[in-house]
Image (cartoon, rainbow, N blue to C red; front, side):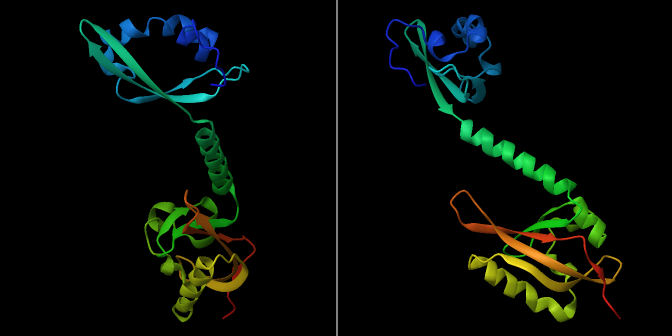
Length: 208
């Protein structure tokens, strides 16, 4: 946690914020008494303490080892600051997407819908429950079915498809003119595994 001067200091005084230290000093007895309900052999999140006084989020897992008549506890700590930041960013992005007036849809490279915001519900007439886990072809008129494979091919090549003017079909059967913006969504290894499709709300019914 950023400090090498740990000799003759208790662990609680080194890595635990002051407000939590009284309880931490009773952990061994508490763990033995209520082991099923606490952190033994599982992971929990706690606040840690760095040398500079900052308090990073930690994930801690404690394993007991019985030595004769006593117990030794092994604690494994992981700094999860980056993971928590990524989670917060995902929540923030999800909130932005959900509240957008535009139809924003994510789907797998095989065309399976994985998310469907309120803008998509308003634009196409399908609820999220109706759309998610369905193939996105239900939005595509018969004479434009080849578009999907061509767009996915371009996305797999790393291309961002911007303002692609086309026609899509609503639940009521009406066809509307829209402009698609499609971007790849990468997984933790940097590989494309989904696409994000944004349909701005500026659309109109297709002329007969």
